Length: 229
View 1 (cartoon, one colour):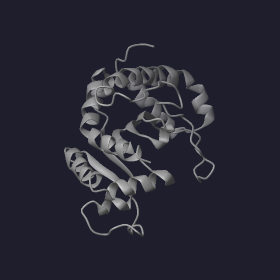
View 2 (cartoon, helix red, strand yellow):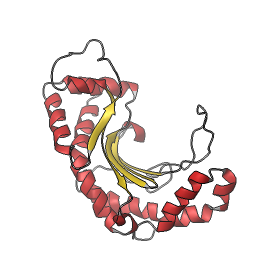
View 3 (cartoon, rainbow, N blue to C red):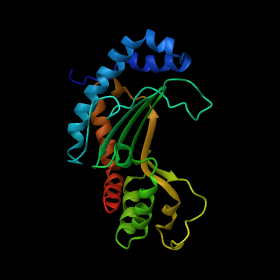
View 4 (cartoon, helix red, strand yellow):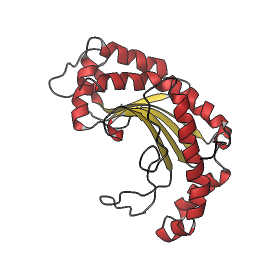
C-alpha cells in the first residue's frame, strides 16, 4: 500500500464524469481510473487516518477494504425508481464497537463533487438501538451530558442533525431540555464544504482529524449510550 499523499484531481473528475454517465458500460471502461485515482489513495487514506484517530478513539476500526471502511460503489436499486447502478460519491467510515458496522458510531468521510462532507455519530438507529438511545436521552446523567456534547461541537460550520419525528414518543417525558432529542432517529455532527485544497495532499489527514476531534463529543456520547443496551 502506497503512503497517502492526497487524492489526485482525477478522483474528482472521475465522480463528475460518472454523474453524467452512470452506466455499467461507462464504469467498466473506466475501471483502471477508479482503481488508480480513487481506490488506491482511499486505501492509504483509511490506513493513515485510522492511526491518527486512535489518538482520540483507541478502539476505532479502520479497515481499508471494500465493504469495510470503504463503501461499495454499487447502489441498491431494489426499492428505488432511480435505477442508476453506481454511487456518484466516495464514502469511507471508521467505526467503534463490536456490533455490525452500521450499528456503531464512528467518523464518516464523503466526497461528492463539488463538496466534501465530514460527520461523526450515527445517521440512523436500528430499532433496538432507538430504545437505548431514548433511555440515554432521559437519563439523569447522560441527558445533560448530551446537551453539553451538542454545545461543544456546534459552531464554525459544524451542526448537529438527526431530527426526524414530529411528535414525541409515547411514554417519555415532554419536559426537560434534552426532550427535543427524543425526536431524533439518528444523531450526528456534520460539516460540509467545497472540496478544500488539502484534499489533494497529505494535509487532508490533518484537515479531517481536526474536524473529527471537534466532533468527538457526539461520538463519545453515542458510544457510551449504546453500549448500555
